Image 1 (spheres, helix red, strand yellow):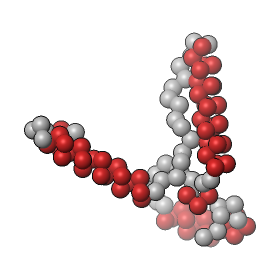
Image 2 (cartoon, rainbow, N blue to C red; image 1 turned 45 degrees about the vertical axis):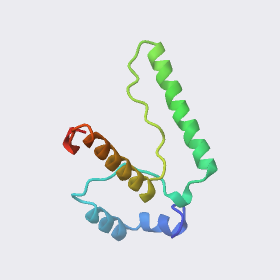
Image 3 (cartoon, rainbow, N blue to C red; image 1 turned 90 degrees about the horizontal axis):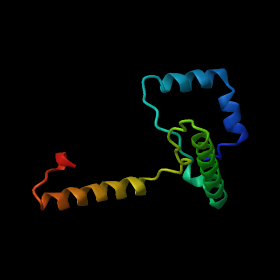
Length: 109
């Protein structure tokens, strides 16, 4: 797979026929929040993501100090992997089993 910043991907993005096909394929589908690809995520991206998040927090602090309402500051997105999804499912299963020892059901969590 080519990097997102390749000439081929640029050509596809600027092709009217490909744009129509991509738009038609995504109609009626809920889009997930954007996350970078794991293959393009390295130490530099991690550090830049941290800087972006800290700048957002600094802006929120300045807004709050000046009497405004900054809202929620969300961290810069990181890659989503199947490992994270499996770990989340395992943690959920453990929590359900643990709560079951005290008489709670999965619906209570």
